[in-house]
Image 1 (cartoon, one colour):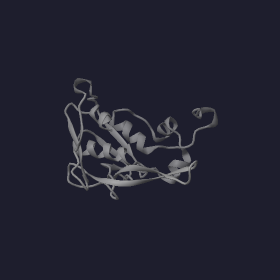
Image 2: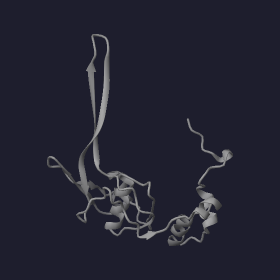
Image 3: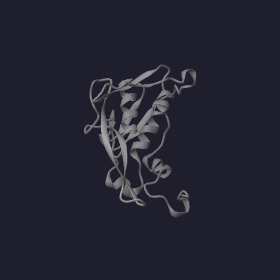
Image 4: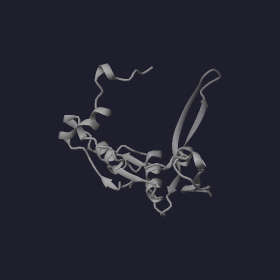
Length: 173
């Protein structure tokens, strides 16, 4: 995420402060300088956007770098760590188990956490059940309009359909 964010700014950007049991370093996105994308930025989120997607959207908002459209995000951003353990059952058998444990809360530049709160978009736009049934995407259509492209919700819905037709289904290995 740090590398990804750095590709959208012409300067280093503080992502967050990590608050844990011991002192943790803040996360910083290092700029890519002149190689950074400097065009108009529109971020689409919904209630299933979580973790790095939420942090990315919030940094874009806080830095006033672009617009965030869609629905409020999930609010699932705490930093966790995987702890794996092995137990010897006898001379020839060992079993492993693990746990994911939260180790830090992430405090954004505005002093607030996103955990259990999420990111509120600049423009809250949701497809209605009728939009989904008809294959319309009003969120993508609005993003296109902000970028200067005329596109109807029907046209937008054909780009990323809610359910792919079998003949257009991407192959999975």
